[in-house]
Length: 110
Length: 117
Image (cartoon, rainbow over all chains, first blue to last red; front, side, top):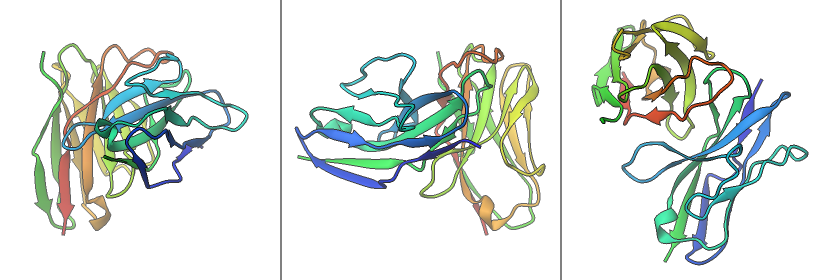
């Protein structure tokens, strides 16, 4: 079974401080990992995926297979980063089923 | 190009009733997935439709069923509603997702808020 754990329901940081949203996963095979974001009154949307190895809006995430983690990081938080963040997993080579974590609300304090 | 739309926005049903939720895919997208998001939880995969056939299902009972039409729009039907079915139901469309080995970004609709009394 595949499972995604986001241990923090709420993370509050000051503007300009570093951000790290934690995500751990459980899956016996080779997964694809994603971060989705939902801004207030907006739809859920893809932020980044580990395969792309890209930085989006200053956010990066590295897949650590040894620790089964995919933490989302940003060196300097901005007020517009305040949103709900979901870590998600898909079985590599499988169909489009995506397993989501419970989400972490990021609150950036001005 | 229009995004994913869902109807209705919200509705209230009573236990034991049946409900149909509708989703229009983003233009050019031929795959639709449905998710249930309970309060305080992440979205849970219900099933996916590609070319009018179900090609993946999560841990939901048979009373959750769906349809996809030739224009790629989709319906989610839930029979014998239970109180625990109260949730936000999300539809997500993606392009060319019939291929098993590639992931194409899913574009989500705004959701339908279902309340079961």
